[in-house]
Length: 350
Ligand code: 5GP
Image 1 (cartoon, rainbow, N blue to C red):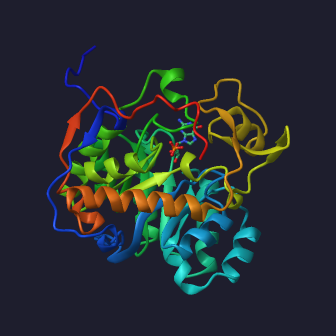
Image 2 (cartoon, protein in one colour):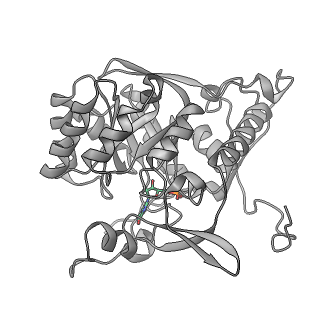
Image 3 (tube, protein in one colour):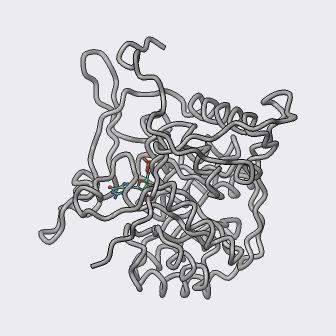
């Protein structure tokens, strides 16, 4: 047994210090970013935010809306090939730039991935996603996918430490997805005692990735636009959001009505709910590592997007970053013991 003594931080442990700036207005901030991927020799362009590949967030409807706002959606892996076919048939060409195809690492997953990619040469991104990215099988799968899809942008995860980021990049990933345990409906940390505070995970994994010309996605733990700004400030190239995008009209989740109010059910992809829905049962040797919540229906996702982007532009203005890419260079965090004033938290009207 060994104890790593240095303190690891989450979003709630820091704030960003404002800096002098020559920006006159938030409207001068450009949130678009172009990113070059060395293996696939491709360039992505757009706002580097991604809707999570959870089955009530990474939906076709979400992708249609978010792509019109230049935001990516990682489509969940539970649509069948017929559903993909009818989705792709109606998709304008420019929307393919904002779609990631998610996959697990089984033989069946591989066959389905090939089928989906055979539907259109315009599909660009593959998101290889397993809960525990420390499995050797993931590295082998990434190598296999790079060999068979040499020109696609490959993202793989989830991990939280630099050496595993390097291993995945060297195996052929362009982007590594970072985050174990920070998610809004995740219970991994309480069920297993395993995890890594997200801000420190980003700082350490971004450092490892950028040294190899790779990139990272911070996945999970963002509660508000301030956290998204902190994730970019810490060095993340992309930020993936589940809970913030959940409960909207585009989510295709189950809606229930209680006391004349409409709620949408939102659950972790390792929750009992998800396992019963997609596998039919929770296998006897497993426990769930996700929970289910009901969210007051939030309406169109566009409103939430505008709110987030407004917050991000303001963060950039506070530190003098004209582009989201500059946020990392202009960020100095201070460690704090408090965040916001909570006096009216239970009384908010608007
Ligand atoms: P959020 O933005 O909601 O805080 O986090 C979303 C991320 O949580 C997802 O992209 C995924 O990585 C992770 N996640 C989703 N469902 C589960 C789950 O059931 N268990 C765990 N451990 N993580 C989950």
